[in-house]
Length: 327
Ligand SMILES: [Zn+2]
Image (cartoon, protein in one colour):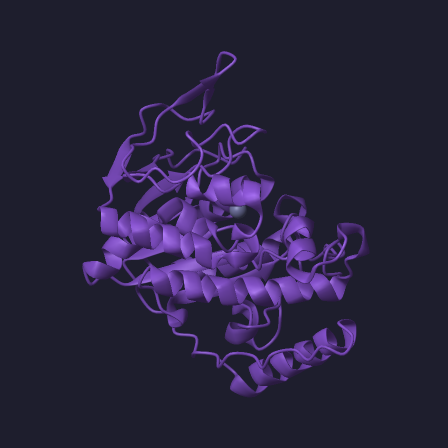
């Protein structure tokens, strides 16, 4: 880690935010814990801040309680969600500017820190890769092409605000928005942490950022030769929140397949799922608190209902074969 560079980056971004948001001062960045990427027992790859709690909030609690070391890796800062930014800053979505999306990123990083603390996971166990929300599947293949420009933030390279991005911490400079760079970061994190288990979105997840995150994890596994156990979770299936069902928190109920007009959800994965992890009522309650700590999401009524639907008496996972690809 290069603390001077990290501090300079944080100061630069704070100035950019202050300039872009009128008279409102930006809060001082939280102190950055040192980057300590050593061996851990379990890694959760989350496309956005909140997916770690949605997919594996119970598993993370159980791992921490058992004394196991965990790492949560966020592929994006969740900085491309207009509804969340509009609600958070009380602006019309059409009026949002890049500075607003950067403020959303800062807020979502802080929310992730608070949420994961509710799961027993401290800030030093969180890694933010800082790739663009909503655009992971569209990254150009390599640095030979111009990097992608995030339509939300206008940035072309990784960044963090409340917490610097991984590449800046590890290499002293951000990584361009291309797939080779993203894959390189995932490979480095996997090689350094070398966990027994990896949790990631399932390739059948219908959100492009989610199956694209699986694709990065899949390719990083192939490149590093890592041979631990992969468990996947489905966060998005169906265009109308068909999964999970019923909507809202039902901590006493197991996940169930949901059939709508002859189509079964979650789609593209077998039912019953091969791995079912029971949660205690206390763990389900802490998972709910962690989800609610992602306040920018929780503030949106439909999103809140959807997120709460993952609070059940268990968490369910699939085990894709090593040859499975994304999509
Ligand atoms: Zn997500």
